[in-house]
Image (cartoon, rainbow, N blue to C red; front, side):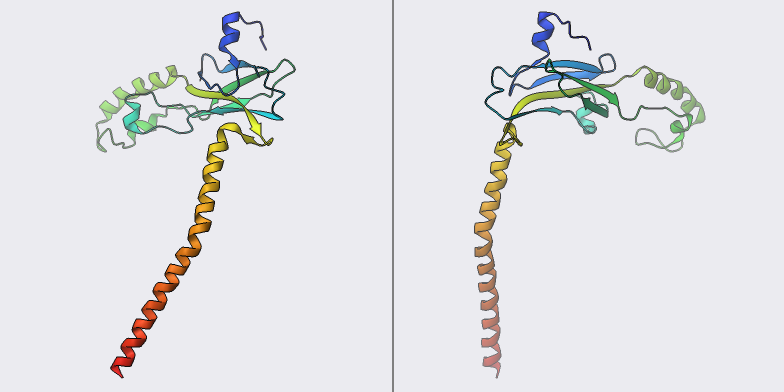
Length: 199
């Protein structure tokens, strides 16, 4: 691991608490190194976590016209060493392997019955593109403390919303059950009155 970085690179690859860092993993730079800078907050919390987020699937086609589609990537993180450095590396999940028979399969972009000559002309072009393309995956990294030693601080609002939803559901369900029971009793009483009038 090359830790001899310039001052600019150290500041760029320094993770500070609750400050997201957005960068890219690509075929030209598949591994990045970061320094965990706790900013003297490491004694305030019992535990810390590093969370990495990246696109897990392809975006809708209309977004691909604006943004390049993400490449399916497997991300691996090495635990921090004694100098508090971590490394994040990415590798493509499934490399795109062009096959000669793929040009004969129907797709929404070409008719089912197309000429063999047109397919043979388009095939070398597609193979050339696949050979030259690499992978690039945007990642978001954040260093955050663990509340109570197990809950990330950014997840606290979500936990509050879940607890609030459970509380509202717990208070509303008995009233909803009583309302349903009242409506059923009213319906049964109306039926009994109707049968008595008929008799």
